Image 1 (cartoon, rainbow, N blue to C red):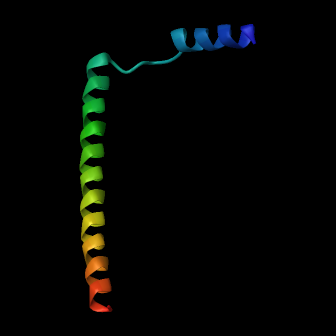
Image 2: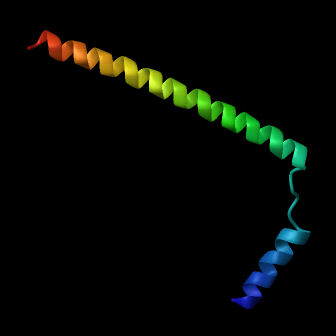
Length: 61
């Protein structure tokens, strides 16, 4: 187990190319913005379908 952790640390330190901090921040903002937009779209579709279903059930009463 100790050997695995040492090798993993060595791999991360010496063989992984990390994204520059400024690019990581920019991509994080883009992901957050798209997540908010997608959440709003899902909320909107849910609200519309909820209204349609409520209207349907009022019609068949």
